[in-house]
Image (cartoon, rainbow, N blue to C red; front, side):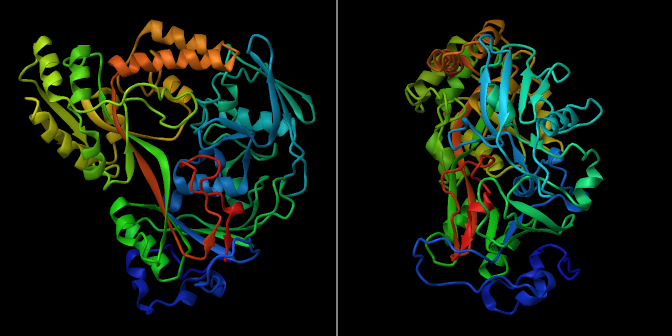
Length: 525
């Protein structure tokens, strides 16, 4: 199915909307997509056609091994071919997928999971043995699979199949939010016989809505409708994933009719095209936390008065407007706005430079100078650093902006410096706490280490009643709001552009949740 004339979408390969570019020359095997419809949508789903979706990719090293999924392109392809036991809804609560139900014991350290009736693409049933094989493969200490850390609470040696479609998971400690483990990024279920990554690239077999047709790493992948999909066959005949690393190439490809779906547009592009009739702009709200990260274990941010002063220095609306071109909502120094367990009863912080100066004076930091690490590694980072530098100056604080390498920025900021730009994609609030805010968290960029805070997390995880558990999480968030190290100034939209004949794209689905890149529910009008 692969045509060597189509090496992935490149900037020079598109002549925008001039009509000069040949769609036929870019299509696989000459299979052009459906004619672009300008008729009004009547709301009815339609069956058939190939949707062409462009994502930034990873080059020739790309793989269809779902346990190695790292980029958005990897995740979208994996979602089309495979299933997880659970996945996240728009509020980041875990929803059953291959798991039909789950039930804990009284002490929350053993969970019984029952699978729904589902089959792999080769017609074999999805069984408990496949699930345990998949999780043990992910947990292989010799490998670096993405979901390994998420599966850490499971004692996989003690866990066992109790029937063809039932599993008893034995946990290392009480875990009330165990369904989040089942929904973890990359925790896909694969057939027991699949062990080597090369097996997936040759002919992957999953239980997802689409079946494998072809794959050219760094170029394209084509999948066909799975008529026997347990959640209903897709509307589309086929979906094609095309690699286009430059945003301008993705935009011009939609304008030129060469693709129908462009992932990850920047806010400036969205503003330029929104409401113009050529590209439909889809904004996935609350998809990316935007923050400044203060290291709480070293001067000057080991003094909570300095941290509180910085909370009050930030003009959050100015940061949203200037760094994100208005494509987001203001934050309140807590992760997960709109997500399950979010403490939305706390008053919204506003800029108060007088109070900030008073706090700095009491801390003996009236003429404070700090270095703010940033990089062009993410949209808005360099702009946010410049804006905050100017805001801090009005409070008597000198902020020196230091540019870091795009290649090593995320590893550099874990241990280096005192203040940095930071962002995070969607995840449950519980996961944010466990991965970033416990004393032994491996990505604890704020160096927030408090044994009493750790104890509250363990209390939440051993609390069976959900309302009582929510109260513990609120207590933890109030502590972070008062003296934490994350100055969370906003939540950015994740922006997608589609052709006007693409229907069924979910608008209430933060990136990485179940309904993001959900091509089995999309159709072409």
